[in-house]
Length: 90
Image (cartoon, rainbow, N blue to C red; front, side, top):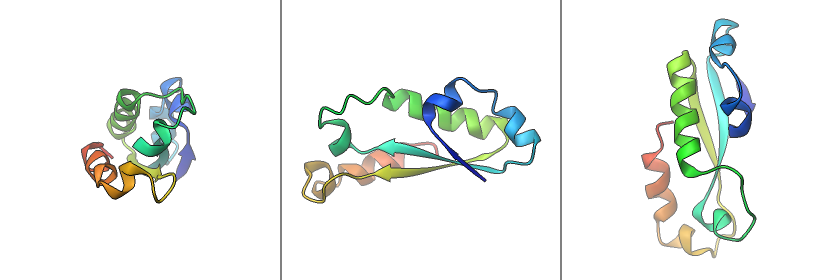
């Protein structure tokens, strides 16, 4: 099992990880409330999806954890967070 950032997977041949025995990779994904707060994350939602598929195609299981931000954030209480997470291929 491993935990890394999307930017690392974008630049890495993750097939080597699977060949070395890594069966699962945890990746963080920003929630809508965090992404919309002007923190200027360098990773797009499409890149997150691409990386999850890259890990899966390499032979490891992709897992995601979501940084949900503040509990009073609109994305949390409107349910968009759950909708967005359900669309990720992890």
